[in-house]
Every structure is written in structure tokens, then in C-alpha cells.
Image (tube, rainbow, N blue to C red; front, side, top):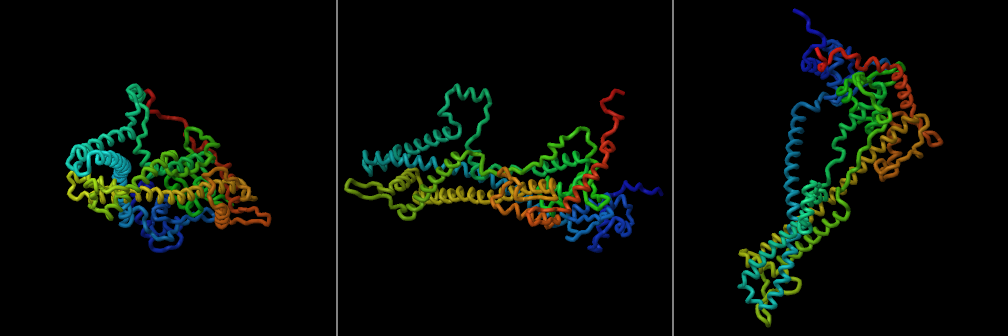
Length: 504
């Protein structure tokens, strides 16, 4: 029976054998140790161990002789498979779907409620004003039987007010002539409906860095391609803005995704080599590849400040009216009719609007008009107004924290780049943080990151206040030596020998 080819194998079977061997101990493993424990060829072990390290959050070490050692201090718990990851993925999908549906419904409810109540309260106030005039002219008791003036007439006025206001706010049709409407339709000008502005005020405009993983990978590949396939961990930290621990975990994943390997220079410096990324058919700008992208800060909304203030004032109107109706529903209830020397009439003063509303609801057929006014015009808009203020308030607080984290991450990119540029004599006091995106609100944040980097990279501070990062300096010097020895022509695409468009 013919022996199977070494590089033609069942990946799942090889990984299972490796996992069985790794589960037997928590020590460091070399490829030779795993070959002895499993009987697998070294080529298969070296091909599959990076993927296993990624899935089980393994730790990679490289000896001064260039030997790669694998260890799994967190145990062999897969981050992608098993009951736990499945349930987390399922729960994430369910909650994401429920949140999306709930958010969509809530957006519709907010739009209808914010302007619906605002228009309704204005309409009721106008009706009460005209109703008070009618009561004064026609007598209090006689107006009860005039269903056209107090009931259907009021309903007609309310309907027309709603129609006019909705057209004014959402489409501005009352302010446009036929020629303007025709020109807008002909030119297909982009409209920005009011509901989008309301959504932006309440919920914001999403994450401006939603595609950051893709942006990071593009920047990473561009840097590697312009530096002869070689990158060091400090350089990757400068590209990503990640702390050393996070950067080490992420570059382990990139070793799998972009077919890289951890290597050691002749003098014992660790670097990462990605020969497959050197097979490029076009050149990359070195300057562009060395300009590391920054994460964008999150905005409260895409509206201007005036429009956001307008929404707040509308909500304040709803809040005041809702409080008014709720207080009167509790204190006055159905006792809205009073007897005066002129006859029977409605309560006056500050309670007149409530009294007239209850009267109007009774004329429209409501069985318990006071309860309808209390719940529909009191409790409901009051709760809504609190939510309308509360959600943006909480979001604003979270936004400030998230932006501080983004500023700090961007600041680390500037810091790490400056240290790499001058590891022998780095002075953090003269480091410029020119833009808001890289300037945290806490002045001591920069020094905290410098000390954290020094603890990781063996940094030492002199009496003059300058830092020396000997390990970073050594690593970068060795990386330049390795780059000088790499012949990119050996990895570039060679002469074309077959072309599908070539004529046969």
C-alpha cells in the first residue's frame, strides 16, 4: 500500500492527534516534542500548530536559537467550537436580532410619539381657546348639545391641524410651489427626512469604526509589503495601537491568516516573516504604508446643535403637558363642571384646558374621559419624555467614555511610533499630540502608557528624564538587518507562462 503524501492529509485528524498530546501536560512544546508524542511529520505539525494556537489562545515563544515553543496556559478551551462558544454565538445572534427589532419598533414609536403628542397638545390648546370663546358667546350649558362645534367640529379642526403640521414638518409641501417640487423631483435631490434626524438624536449614527478590522488588516499588509515581509511586535503595536499583550494575541491570528511565521535573528531578536505577502504585482507607497490610520471619535449625532435643541424643546413641551394632564387627572378627575351665576360651565383658570379636554372626550363618546385623559395625555407622554431625555443622556455618558478609550488607543500609536523612531533617547515631555483624536482628557494618560511600555520593553529613565528602550532598539536594529538580507525578487511573481486570455 502506497504511503500518503506528507502534505496531503486530513486536517481534522491531525489536529485531534495534536490536541490529545497537548492535553496531557501544560508545559512548553516544541515541534520535535509533538512529533515524538504523536508520530506526525514535522511539516504537518508546523502547518497546523499556528491554527491550534489561535483557536485555543496558545502562547508562542521563540528561543534564542530560533526554536518555536507552544504553550497553553489557559487550557485547551476552544474559542470557536464547543457548547460554550455555540451558546455564546446563539445568544449573541438572538440578542442582536431582538435588539434590532426592538430598536426599529422603538424608533417608530419615538417618531410618532414625539411629534404626535406635540401636535396633539397644540391642537387641544387651540381647541380649548376657541372653545372658551364659544362658551362665552353661546352659554355654558347650551354648548353641550352642539356636537358639531364641540365634538365633530373639534375633530375636524384637529384632523386638519395634524395634516397641515405633518406636511409642514416632513415634506414642507406648504412652503413649496409646484415649480420647486418639480425641480426637486427632476434633479432627484437627496432629502433628509425629519425622522432620520430624530433617530440620530436619540440613538446616534452607529459606530464610525465598524470596519476597523478591515482597515487594520489593510494597513498591516501594506506595512509588511513595504518592509520586505518583516514586522516586529513594536511595529505592529504602532500600527494597531494595541497594548503589548493584546498585540501579541492579534499577531498570532495574523500569522494564520496571512501565512506568516515567527522567526529569530542570528542575535536572538524576535520578528515575524510573511513571505506570501511579498508576492505582489504592484508597488505600494512606502509613505502611505507608514502613515498609520487613527480611529475616528464617535459623534453624539449628525445633526447640528440647533436641531438637537429643537428636539429637546419639543420634548419639554410634551413633558410639561403630560405632567399637567396627569396632575389634574389625579386632583380634579371628572369634576370639571361648575355652577356659576351665569349657569353651568367648565372649570376655569389653569384647569380649563384639562376640563375642556375631558368635555371634548365625553362628546366624542369616551366612557371614562378623565381616565383617558390621565393615561393617554398624562402618564404615556410623561414616560416617553423621560425616556427621550434619558436615552441620549446615558448614551452621551457612554460616548464620553468610549471616546476617551479611542483617544488613548490613538495616542499609543503616536507614542509607539515615536519610541521606535528614537528608542535610545526618548523624551515623552516633548511628544506632540496635535489633534483631539490623540489627546486624552487626562494629562497623566501619556505617562501611564510610557511606564506600561517601559515595564514590557525594559525601558529605563535617566536623571534628565529621557527614556532608553534597549530591547526595542535591539529588536528594530536586528529587523533592519534581516530586511537587508531579504531579496524581494525571490518572492515576486515571475514570468507569466499561462494566460486564460491568450490565444491558443
